[in-house]
Image (tube, rainbow, N blue to C red; front, side):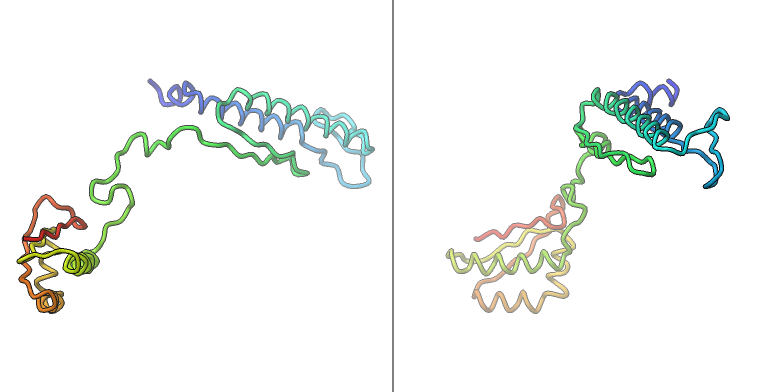
Length: 195
């Protein structure tokens, strides 16, 4: 299948192409004369165009024809479309509400690490979340020791940069805190297990 057939055979692209042809027709119909002020104007076929109100009404009549043709073409479109009037420059402002998911949503799946958010928490942030969870559980439950299960990067940070804070938590709770790496955990997954 040729690329051109791929796009033309799809309803949305065929609609867009027909709209483009309508707009090209609007440009051709709305094209004004090229005469200087005070000189007789000539139209597309060399005929003298009137500078009176009749010439402007003819132009507005052509714009109305284009407007109706565009409305008729868009009426076949499933998506909700809003059209504004044709400006003095011959431009039409329109909005079109998307009815389907984007192509990226159709062809791709959310990232397993960030669940489609586009970012993951840093090991430092996860360490602070673990500290808050330990403090929360300490006030609610009785236990002999704590086991923290987390991603390797988080465990390494707890043993290195956050080792002083971890030691303070052990003193505050009066219970030992053990750390265990979980290979299948993502960077922002962790569990605090009371033992």
